[in-house]
Amino acid sequence: MKMYDMIIKNGTIVTASDVFKADVGVKNGVIVALGNNLKDDGADTIDAEGKYVFPGGIDVHTHLEMPFGGTVSSDDFTTGTIAAACGGTTTIIDFAVQAKGQSLEQTAETWHKKADGKAVIDYGFHIAITDMNEDILNEMPKAIKNGYSSFKLFMTYDGLRVNDDVLLKALIMAKENGGLICVHAENYYIINYLVKKFLKEGKVEPKYHALSRPTVAEAEAVSRAIKIASLADAPLYIVHLSCKESLIELARARAQGLPVMAETCPQYLLLSEERYEESDFMGAKYVMSPPLRSKDNLEPLWDGIARGDIQVVSTDHCPFFLKGQKELGRESFNKIPNGAPGIEARMALLYTNGVGTGKLSLQRFVEVTATNPAKIFGLYPSKGTIAVGSDADMVLFDPNVKKRVEKSELHENVDYTPYEGFEMTGYPVMTILRGKVIVEENHFVGQKGAGKFIRRQSPILL
Ligand code: URP
Ligand code: ZN
Ligand code: ZN
Image (cartoon, rainbow, N blue to C red; front, side, top):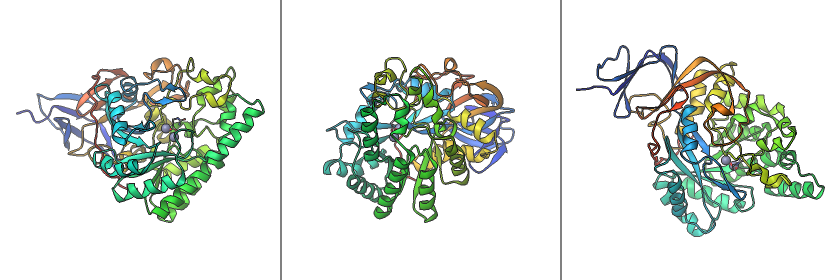
């Protein structure tokens, strides 16, 4: 009888704790052996000599086919997950955003219609609650039981935001039922005041998007959310943390032992506010919330990852074409749909600029791109590590490949990348999802609809 369906030979396996040479034996989509000289003549054998074998990447912050600002993000669950797979990501958690009047169940159903049969990698949903009332609050335990164990609450954006009392109630309900609240932390009133002021003064260019969302607006909301969570005695996860002032709030809370966790994204580690000065409306490429910050925020965020205050690097992938979508805000920065692409280059950019510069160890790289996201969002140990019993989700990564980010090489369905021209040393050369090769040398060879919806467990707090 065949012992293995696949053997990955001679690779260097990297987990959050170890780096070691071993072969990986896979059967029925699961890792069944780690050892030396694994043999099975009937198995597909992949030679990984000279390559790292990382756990498949997990991107816990994506927006596929999401309505926003009068348009819809341009990657759907097929194009977006193909791009993710080509970049070494095998699981995403997308935000199912509640429409006004929808129940949580209907919200999840809406997102299943977008994803089921279309995704090429595995996926889960956070539910973004935008229309809270007692019925919705009481629906949260069932949603958690059904595997939608995390929720996003927006503290800003007209039409999406919730007040502090809603945040408090949701934190208590989530905590009592094994769920996790994620917050988009920016102070609505500061932003609203500045947006109106700039528009009145005729300041309409993309850079005023950034100027209307100063770091203090984020740090205040981060601080407030942490205090509300501590009152509720509940864990909290801060999405897309972008600046050192917010990091100070986070680090202080963690030093006090509060269960507050956070992610940042490549754009806040690699890009800065000068980008908004690009001529001919090209600053619109970077209109996202929170916005890009001054350069002196970059190193503190890298340090925050290295020392453990920031646990996750996700993308907040939310692509809009410049043509026809970002252009909606040509006359007025507040009409530019918020968001930027990034799902494909996350692993390679973080490797080059983190591991390649000595800022992150190999293990820390794996921890923030796969293991911690899996733990925090209830996927571990099926996902996020290379161990006997885990799903055979792996990426073979060649640390010697030299490549430049070019839009024409990426699979994202959008007409630009914010990282155009970035040099990379190290790139995924093969992506494996539950024992099936789905990407080889930047070519997608998997199947539309092969991605599986994952019902997630309660968070492991880090
Ligand atoms: O600008 C952003 N981040 N767009 C996506 C929605 C969100 O706030 O995450
Ligand atoms: Zn957000
Ligand atoms: Zn987002």
